[in-house]
Each structure stands twice: as structure tokens, then as C-alpha cells.
Length: 413
Image (cartoon, rainbow, N blue to C red):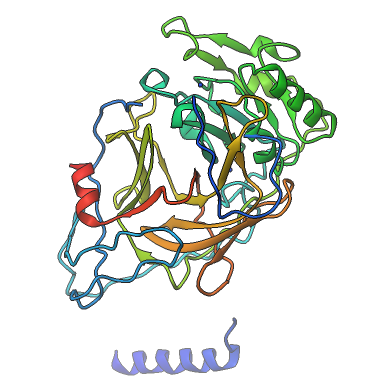
């Protein structure tokens, strides 16, 4: 048997040598922004519930003696104290042999707004942008928001926020509560290759702005009047204006063949070498407290609002694979003096949160038709998002805070 084994080994070596080897309703505060560039014409108490085990990452240095440095930005940043934290289920290491399986990277088509593989091809439909209410507890729970590829969270009247939700790779059966449009919205969604813009009415000035945007091919509008209005309804179990519902598939069926799929707004790839572990991020305005905490179980950023998990209609926490905190400018809207108008072109600083880490960034968007350029604020190199959903916080200067381990643990409980 030994001779036969040796012979087989010799034959295998000879064979190996011969074959070779292959190789996105009151008083507004006018602010001075760090953003530069052209300004555009447009733009709750949480539901109680429980989430799964939320792991708070260790943000100390490898030696455990000093806190790691946080990314450089123009904002105050809270560094993490020296705390060793273990979370999640752990198993003793196997003393025996281990086998590692490495999957080949996907090199086929990817979804434009998530970077995820599209083995069945990219859906031949335009991006659907829906204004979703978040004024107070009466807006909760939202329906369909969990299916969005990108959610822009924008400040509106009375220093609360409203969502501009972008759907493409997945369409929920219904979306609620659909709310009114703002001037901010037009510039914000102009880089989606003529999206369908869905909203529940507006004042006359904003209505004229939307009509002008349609005329110039910026977007296709669908609201409670005009074409496609039959796809809007009221949920009788809730009180107006928090009960507006839209049928996304029905709206899409009212479109012409001219509508096309959107192009990418971000690039997707590995994290930056400069990324450091972090527990989460907080955005606080006069009337809104928003927090995203990294969860090691789901490997996503779980959203909290007013100190409670923000749950969808099925009781699951809203979450995102990426959180972008952009420092932007707001001005008084020409359409309504009590309404802030987002300035979504120009440049500014901020943070990118992905894979339980944070990186300081510089964002830029010169024209409304441009996607978002996200660069490392230290090296100037382009940064990539993780594949999956993205939540974009449109914050004013000084409103962001990186959470340390203790703060995140106090929130999670």
C-alpha cells in the first residue's frame, strides 16, 4: 500500500508539472452652511418595540490602553472611552482543522441604487420617489419604507424631518403615509434619470416648480390630481393627513415607455483603510432626535427615533447598510417662509458609516444631475459604500455626534 501511495503521489506531481497553473408642517432657522456651489430650486415619538440583540462594537485601540482617533471633520466628535466590549454569541475556537470557503466576487450586473448583484437583470423601470411623512408619532408606523434603496431624511417645518424614499430594486405593495412636496425635492431627485415623483399635493408655488421640472424632463410627477390619481387612497383606520396611501405598481402602470432605470448615485466596494470602529451616530435638531446604532447580529445600522426603536408596520426595526451624514445648508423657501429649503448641490463634510465603522468624508455635487462624490477627508481618495440600502441624513453644521460605547448601550438598553 505504501508503494502504491508513493506511486500515486509521484504521478500526481508529474501531472501537476505538465499542466501548469492558471490564474438619496414651522419656523425655519436660516443657517450658514459649509456647503459651496449652486443652490437649487427645491427642498415622533417612536413606536415602542424590541429588537434583537444589538452588539456595540469595541472602539478602543488594539492594545486597549488608548481610545482610537476619530475621523477629522469640522464638527465636534465624541471619542470612545477605553472599554472592552464583547457582544453576540461566541463559540470556543476549534482546535482541529478548519476549512475556509471563499466565494468568487460577483462580476455581473448590479442594482444601480444598492450595488447588489442583479442575476436576473436590472428592473426595466424608473426610480420611484415617494414623500413619506415623519412629522410626529401619528406618522408611525410607516408602511413600505423598509423596501427603499435610498432614504433621504430632510428637515422640514418646526425642526422635524420628512423622508424622500427612493425605490427601484424592490417595490412594496403599498407606501404610507404619503405627504406633500417641497421645493427641496426637485433638485434632490434630479440625478435619478427622470424618476417618478410621488406626493400628496403641495402649495401653488411648489406645484408650479414641479410642473416646470416636468417640462424640462427632470421628473415625472404623480399626485392626487391629474394622471394616476386613482392609485392614491386613504386608510380609514388612521386620521388625515397621516393616512395617505399609494400603490407603487399602479403608479408605474400609468407611465409611458420613455421612463428608464436610474444610473448609480454612489460607488460600491471595500471599506477605506482609514475607517475606524464606532458604535453609532446621533442627529439632534430642536424637535427631533435620530440615532443609528450598529447591530452585529444583522450587520446593519438600526434606527432609533426619540429614544425608541423605529419600527415598520410589521414590528421590525428600520435599518440601513450604510448611513451617510452630510453637512448641508438650508435657506428659507421662496414657496413658504416657514419652510426650510435644502441646498443639495455644492460641497461639505460629513461621515460615512458602514460595516460598524466610520470615515470622515468630503461630499460634492456640482450640478443637480450629478451623483454624489464621496471622498476621504484625509487622503482625498474616493470612498465606496457597502452593498445594500443607504440612509442619508441631511444635517446642518454642528448637529452630528458620533456615539461612544456607553451612549449606545444606554440607548439600546
